[in-house]
Image (cartoon, rainbow over all chains, first blue to last red; front, side):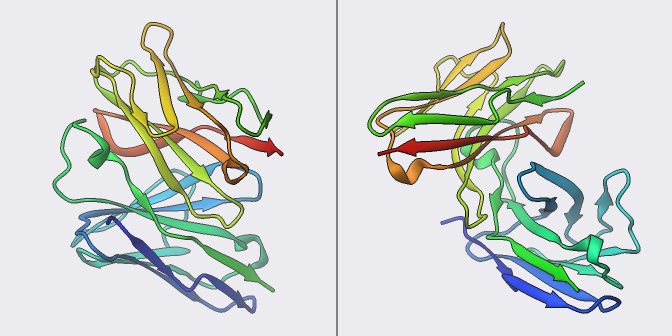
Length: 122
Length: 115
């Protein structure tokens, strides 16, 4: 159980175009999903927290208008990189926390990660 | 201050031996959770083990165990009987009760298992 999918797994696009990445929780509901960015050989950097039915919460330094997040249902969040440029090339990973996990009662408190999307902007 | 510190950028271990990956954390929250994830070269993040701050016993999951020393604020991952498939990046992470949705990740440790 607790599978999260991401689509596409790899995308190459031209500079100036927009790219949409989907994150789906396949066998559980997720009120909250997270979007991370990871540069080669570095740790994950949280970009934003996506909340179903409300606006995403962005981390400091992350451009809201650049990285549009939509959490339309309890199983789907999308990240759109608008007007992508080569510096946006990175590995983007989403994660989802199962709805209903409260406090620190066990492994339910973890987040489950998607397989990631490698974005290359030419 | 860094919330999660992993001081070993890279580690080598002989196959079938045990290895300890270090993790220290910094928090003033009364309740928090500590996690370890494995990231193979394919990029996916695999959840390994979890320790709650109020758990009396160290967490164990198969060959993985977490050596939790609360007073020292350390949460080291111990992998017993290393296998070649254990070669990967390992990340320690923490969640705090007062910042419930945010996971803090360490910089990671690259583990190489030698045959």
